[in-house]
Length: 205
Image (cartoon, rainbow, N blue to C red; front, side, top):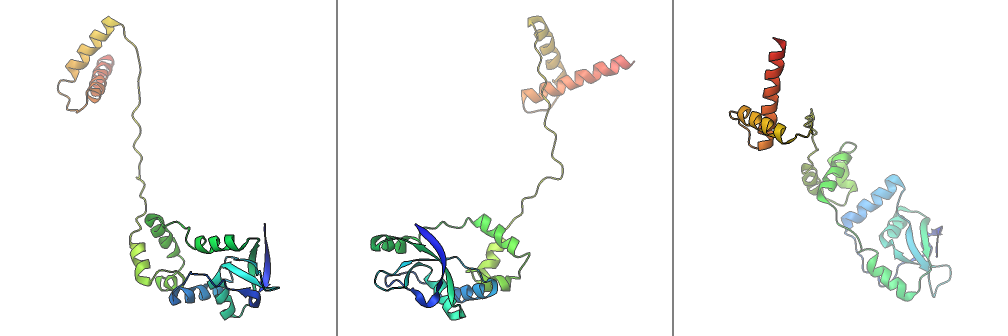
């Protein structure tokens, strides 16, 4: 069971076994982000087992400290009903069970962000340094579609009896003798076109 509620920041207590640490640089970026947008992921807490009206932080220690330093009196929290053992498992997993960025998608994302922000601004907001952001952006290569999509070859299917087959094969072999194509199918197709042109020309005379 869980519910979302606003809880006074002074009532949020850090778990003593929280091992997650954030660099000072990224923590300052977190503060700037919350100051600028007013948005942050809700802090995951549980009721303190030994302190009335207090809530123990499971996930969101740095967000809580950022809110405290900014001067927020209350924080948006999700209250989970979990025991001591479950809490320890969550402390060890919530900050670690995460995927890795796909480099191509990350470069596309940085390129898209660059349309709205300067690199210096991104370096103030994102975890990466300015140098890292520039390197990731440089990897972006937009997909270029061909200006004209070539038409797909047409397929013709017809059936011949044995006599007709021999006549057509002999005609195609003779007409394709001087045609320079790698595959037999392409040579026969070119030979058939050549025969058809000759026939059309003869009919117009």
